[in-house]
Length: 51
Image (cartoon, rainbow, N blue to C red):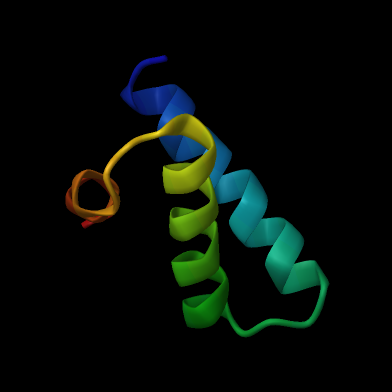
């Protein structure tokens, strides 16, 4: 899994949360946490990636 795969996964989950009624900032936080947990990547590394 490369950087682009991680960013794509975050983006897809963020959009799913937003469609479920979560505001954009909260959706991004939840998406980062979910991807971190599912792909066993440190949350700090994901936050650095997203910026």
